[in-house]
Image 1 (tube, one colour):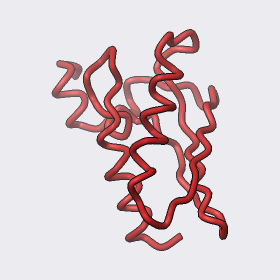
Image 2 (tube, rainbow, N blue to C red):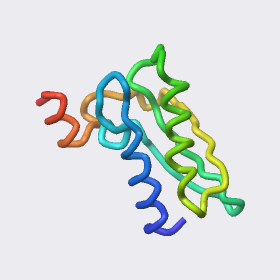
Image 3 (tube, one colour):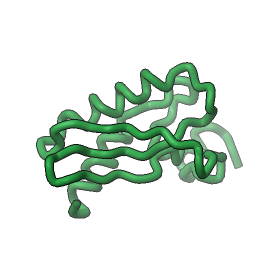
Length: 102
């Protein structure tokens, strides 16, 4: 996958807002990796802020919808992983400021 497409994917994922925190999943540091195979299947490896997140299904659906508008992507697989565990140090400066975290 070229850098322009990867940038487009990450930009689309910035539109996916964590409903509980009100900040996008990229700036929260929840997206670990994005890839795409030769058939146009995008693979997003990500985590959630907590294992028991009741909105996991909603976030996965939002990820799929956000990437559906990118012409090169035919379908999206979202892989939720728990390792490495998410922590506040993974957040961008923007997210930390938005949430009032130092």
